[in-house]
Length: 437
Image 1 (tube, rainbow, N blue to C red):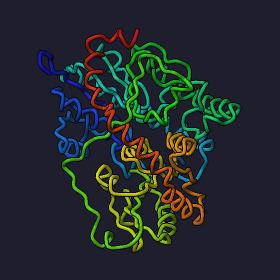
Image 2: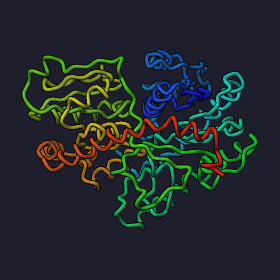
Image 3: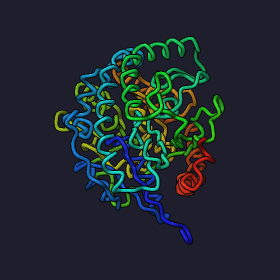
Image 4: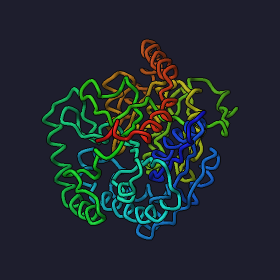
């Protein structure tokens, strides 16, 4: 940072782990490079962020959502009530998305009011957003804005040359199915989009592109997705989109060792996590645990917010949440919901995956892993005992896959793309027009 003015970077993420964690990874790199990182947060997240040495500015709970957008257990219950966590298919969940859209747009309207109040006092040099819809307060501030996409590259940019986001359709599949899915999304979103667009325009912003909840041309977009999985060979990106392999945070303040009672047992070691939200479906967690109990292998389980409501088998150890970055280097296989952080972090460590998506971009990530041969996609609700146990054995015994993954891991760790994020943000602040018109 010699001869450079340190930047004050404000992070404004959705307060879910899947959105906050990549922001932490970027913030830690910025801090290491001499910049200052500040998060909008609440009393749930303030102590967690403090453990990483990150400053926070306080947000009030949203009266519009009764705090639901900031509490994992209640937020996941909302997802269940919307039908987004459950056994419905990806296309069925599009039809169920209406209530979720209303929930998110109301939440962001409340947050926008707070952000407009906070910005004059914070006076950041740049804002990093990790949101699902636009924040007029940020757009109208005149401050350079970076949009971090934790929702995956297909959600980030809808392009006719790729499958639609949240569909789980294959990039080598039938484009007619892509068109049908896109049309359904437009039909479902139409009225909610019009209402939200009217509010955005009423706040003084330009109208949004049709059916889109943000104006992509106004931001530098960054996303974490390994080169081996990305779609840039199908649809190249404009200069205001920059890919990183991952936004993996460090967890130096956390320690983890395999518990002695599990370490003493035979078998390979498998990490089983459906993320922070999906395990709220206790009935399905019980079903999957009962299947895994019949495996000769051992399991570390991230049990989720309802961990007290089900019991693990003798070949397992688990907790409400586990320090994933510390666990992944120790295991031989990952069973995951296909969340973006878990996928990118597992490839960082070269681990094969069984992906069992539940909602949103998880479907896309699971299908991409399957198509690219880095894992297998199964249905989280309908997979049979035979399918799941056979998939575990298939991946654990695939030597060729292990070698490919080791090569991917070496490339990702050698490239260390996250180390370049500070320079990118510095360049963007100094010359935004290099990236956006």
